[in-house]
Structures are given as C-alpha cells and as structure tokens.
Amino acid sequence: MSEDRDLQLAETINCRLLLQERDPPINEVVESGLVHRFVLFTSTNDFPELKHESAFVLATITKGTSNHIAVLIDSGAVPLFVQLVTSDREEVQLVGVRALGNIAAGSTERRDHVLNSGAMMSLTALFNEHATSSSVTLLTTASITIFHLCSRDPPPALEHKNQALPLVKRLLLLFTPWDPTNHLLLQSASLTLSRLSNDGNIQNVIDLIPRLIHFLGQPNLASIVLPTLDTINNILEDTTHIQAVIDNQALPSLLNVLTSTDNKRVKLKTCFTIVCVLSGNTSQVQQVIEAGIMQRLIHLLRDTSNIRTTALIVLATAIHSGSHDQIKFLVAQGCIEPLCDFIISDDISTVVLTTLGALEGILIVGEAEKNLGNTGDVNLYAAMIVDAGILDKIAELRSHGNPDIREMANRLTDDYL
Image (cartoon, rainbow, N blue to C red; front, top):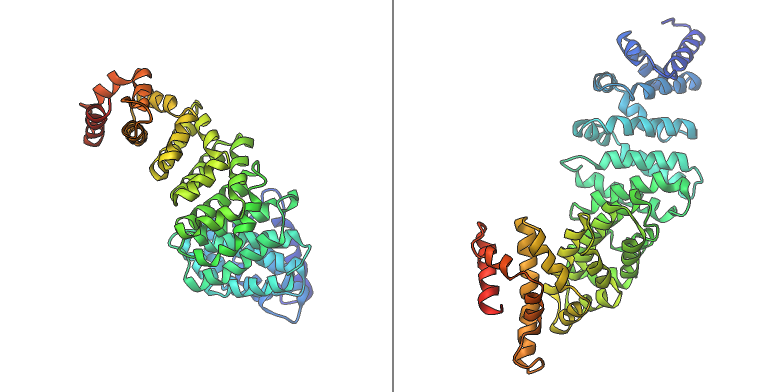
C-alpha cells in the first residue's frame, strides 16, 4: 500500500466497499497482510477520515471466522475499538461497540480480553453521553455487546459485572416494551440481567421488581418475558423477597400470562415462578389462591401438552405449603380427579412420586376432617380417590422398582385406602 495519505484513503475506502458486498472477501483482506496497516491507520489521529475508514474495515473483519478475529487481536485492534466507543461521532461509536460485541461473542477468552481492554468503562462513558438519547440503534447495539460481555461460563470478574449492572438497569428503565423498535434492546438487556442476577447479585436488582412486573404485561413478547421470568425466579430463590414480588402486583400479571399466551415455554416458566411464590408461607399461598391462579392451574392439569406435568408440580407445591383450609379449597376446585389421572396414565417415576405426595397431603386433611367429626366416620377424600378407580394402579405401585414410590404406595394403601 502506498505511503501517499490520499492514496491510502482511497484504497481503504475501496477495501471498505468490497467488504460491504453480499459475500465480503474477508479472508482475502486478512491473508493480504493489510490488517496491521489498517490498525496503524486507525491508531493515528492526524487524518480522521482515514482513521474512521480503517476502523470500518477492521470492524467488518470481526464478522469473519475465529482465525480472522485472532489476527485482529494479535494486531492490537481491540484497544482501538475501545477508543472508538468514546468518539465524538455516533456512527464511529456504533462501529466500535459492534466490533467489541462481535469479538466478545466468540469465546470466554476473547470476552475477557475485551473486558480487560477497558470495554466496560468506555460503554459507561457512552451511556453517560446518551443517557436520554433517542439513538435506539446505538443503544441496542450497546445492549447486545453488554450481553456478550456478561455471558458464557465462567462468568466475568465481579468488577466487570458490577460495571455492567447499572448500564443494564438504565436500559430497562429508559425504554418501554410497548414500542416495537425497543424489543431487541430490551431482549438483550433482559437476558443480561437474568445472567447477572443468577450469580448471587440479587440484592442489587431488587429495585427493578416493579419494572420486571411491568414487562410481564406483554405476555406475547416471549423474547423479553422469558428472561424477565428468569430474573424474577432468581430473586424468589431468597424467600424473603416473595412478598415484595407479590406486593408489586406480580400475581395478576402471572395469571394474565397463563391465560393470554399460547407460548408453551412462557407458560412453563410462569408455572415455575408460581412454584417459587408458593414456597413461601401460608399467607402467600392464600394470596396466590385469591388471585385465581390455582383455579387456572387445576384447569391446566387436563392439558394434553407438557404444561400438564408442570402444573402438577405447582399443585403439589401448593398442597405441601398450604394450610388445612387451603387444601380443602383446592379439593373443592376439583383437583383430585386430574391427580388420579396422572396415576393411571403416567409411568415416569418423578411424576408418579409427585402425584402420590400430593394425594397423601390431601388424604391427611381428609383424615383430620374425619377425626374432627366433620365427615362422620368417613375420609371423604379417600372415598373420592377410590371412586376415581385407581386402587388397582396403586396396588401395582406397591411393588414398583423405585423404593420411594413403593414406600409411598404402601403408606397410602395401609393408612388411608
């Protein structure tokens, strides 16, 4: 390549235009040995146009193979991309942000190389500049890059996660899911938050609970709702936060998701969120009941898809955590018949064991009602189970290969049936 600066610019522009073709000749550019020259051009500040054109060329190469990216890294391109993020030109900032994301997405080692080159500090400066920006494209690209910088195992160093979290929170608070142009931004930010909150960082996301519940108001946006549910589930792993989630109107939102979406993955994850809530105290179980969620879950026990088994787990958790009166309410809603159907139709050990446990919880309440004189000398719930025609099946389970199933089937038969 010539040492004439104007010719260098012209040739660099030609190279950029070639790389914008449908099938860009990235390999040919890398094999030509020009990457070092473009890195040199990008590192100089006395010819801004050449600097920026070279940066575009290098950024395009980040879309290439792992070997192409290795050449970029070895040539010292990553610190230059970090510098571009703080450029005074938005289109140049976009180039730097996108290039860093492309490199970080390749492997854990490359992710850490980008982070150790100061990427998160530059992104923080970018966010400070565009705190109220209408530049959705730039911030969407930044959101995707932050996701790549926080994904993969092992997770990034705590220092980098602590730098990323405020940026993600700002994105989630600044943009609304009601505008379709924000969906990709919010999807990547939500995915990042679910990852960050899965690393024991719960205390730093508690203040986002109202916003997370707000996002559930768009149940058909699975790409946003799924990671949002993941984050809520991470929060609920600490049962001291269950009431805070309930107090922010999570239960009506969860019911709305269950009733208004056909997306099976969203329904399944919603069920697991409800399981987390039901793992609290009887007052919280009562709030789930009063929200109308358990009635909907009992209906889902008759579903023909895999949601049926997940609904069983929700019901079993409610029975395990619920009070005497709460279990009576569940029986009054018709839960015994679909439970008995599981005994008849399923032979998966975990499903059978979960069902037997739920039935035992119901039978214990029925026995207590009998002992209190409320049902004469009859355990009405035992009678309902007998009427469902599953005694022969339970008798078979008494010789089941799984010792836990065998023990529980014997206990139910000997003590109640």
